[in-house]
Length: 445
Ligand code: GDP
Ligand code: MG
Image (cartoon, rainbow, N blue to C red; front, side):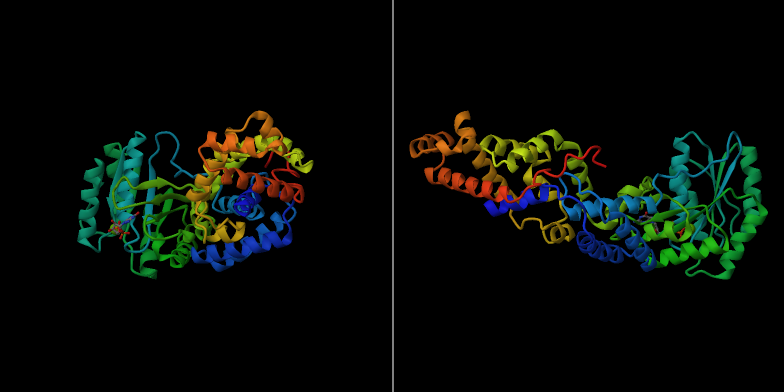
């Protein structure tokens, strides 16, 4: 158990500055994670380089190990790469009508997303008009009508006998008469990028003033989505991207590369087939998802918020003087529990065998088991008098006997605890800087 505790504490102590080795080891894993998540190779390369430069020499925060510290920096950089804030679709000011053109390959989710967006605008008190500009598939027109009806918004169609550009023009006239202040053009896609599709979109843009061209891409297509985004941006110019099907089994690396490659923000994320399944795009959430870190970020936040810095400092001083007693021991357990308990902490790591497991050398233990053992140890300590807790040396057999009875354990367990405690004290003596020894940094980050 001493060894297990040692591991846990190792994860909780602060360790000065990040060395080049710390960073390299951690970034190797991050690089793999990014590539696996389908992030563009070039993006990964320059990204890793940036992080490396930023991370080496940085202070390791209290409560984090070097691996976690690197992850924290990686996360911040990922968020920055995707555009630090959520971006809204820019609407024309005042009473002016905003014209939005939806573009993208066939099956990307344009028609569905058009209806989803209409619902969002309606909630904001707008009066959207959906326009069926996909004249190649009669079913597409019907699909828009059905979805528009579901959302309770107006739909404008002219069948499939007109040019999309002309439909758009007529739709704007209709909108003016009908009082629609947002017009969303649902255009036709093709299976692959081709000149015909681009030309059609250009014609629409020439026929009417399009304020926002929004590209819809399917996250499931991974790197292809990035190429598609680049092509559309080069050929017709786009203002924003909506990534659909992020509910599927995809880690969303495409989302990251899209911003990096096109410079266009991701506006929304499609999270399902239902018309309510459209979410604001949050770069920070996507960052943690891409890293596949489970709730590691929550863990990091908890460490930032909950570890009481003064207590940690005080304790580290005691440790260095090797005055650590059972009371301090209880206190350190309390700190740990503040962070959600040992089981919880381990649970937040993405798995013992996972990335953080390897990086942070997460103890390879059954967390429930460890938790139970910790509770028993606490019970034993609680059965001690304050004097005994402060001076473990006075624990003679008769005292131990009494403590064992009080805690409802065998005396051998009390003996074991005492022995382990002695070992731990020795170990801690050799480990200055533990529990924030070198920490106590102001501002934390
Ligand atoms: P379009 O050809 O670009 O207009 O694509 P559609 O809007 O017709 O969508 C193609 C298919 O993808 C439909 O079956 C949609 O229900 C589905 N779809 C669209 N967005 C999402 C999404 O965010 N998640 C999931 N799971 N399916 C989606
Ligand atoms: Mg469609």
